[in-house]
Each structure stands twice: as structure tokens, then as C-alpha cells.
Amino acid sequence: MNNMDDAIDSRDIIARIEELEGDDTIDTDDAELRILTALADECADYSPDWKYGETLIRRSYFEQYMDEIVADCYTMPKDMPSWMSIKLDYDALEQDYAIVDFDGVEYLIRSV
Picture 1 (spheres, one colour):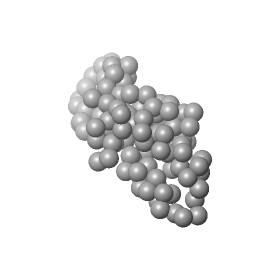
Picture 2 (cartoon, helix red, strand yellow):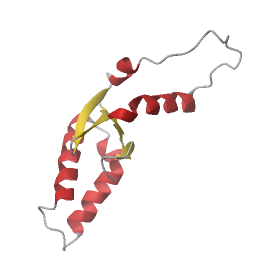
Picture 3 (cartoon, helix red, strand yellow):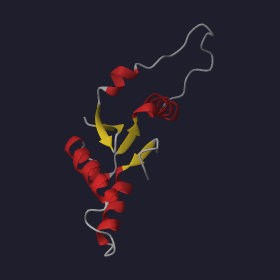
Picture 4 (cartoon, helix red, strand yellow):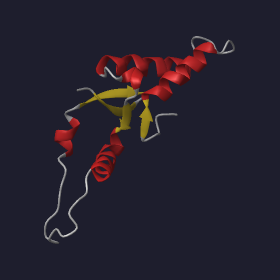
């Protein structure tokens, strides 16, 4: 996992931190460990579900992610007139999320 991923499960970050901490060959000042620990600390402050599984969404991927969630959860009417469309208010959806920094890249995590 890295800050180029579109979506990251918090449990994967937690597992990687534990893996790095358990590796005797890794220095406690290891860059990856420092970066992931800082991210985990920041995310845990925003999300009560951090340790149970919360998705971090790369900011540039947020609209596509929301579109996919809606498509997975709802069936749009097939007989909708061609002149009618459904548009999500991404700004309103983003209000339920906090912005966190993953080594210089903004991710969104649900914070409600």
C-alpha cells in the first residue's frame, strides 16, 4: 500500500504497522513505519471505526468512489426519460469526511 492507491482499508495499515514493528531488522526510525504511524494516529482521531475497518479514499478518487457506492447500493430506474439525470452533490457528501495526510497526499476518511 502507498499514497498512490485510490482506496485503502485501515486494517491493512494497522497490519503493516504491526508487521514493521515486529521485524527486528527494521529500525524504529524507518520512514515507512513513521509515515504509517503518523497516518494511523491522525485517522484514529477522526474515525471511531479505525481499528475495525474504515476506508481511506484518495481525494482525486472521491467522486468516482461515491458513484460506485451509489451504483452498488441503488438500482436506478431503467425507464427514466432521457432528459432526466441524477447528479450527486459531492460537496455535501464530503461533509461527512475528514481530510488526512498520507505522506503529502490528501485522503478522506469518514468521520461521522
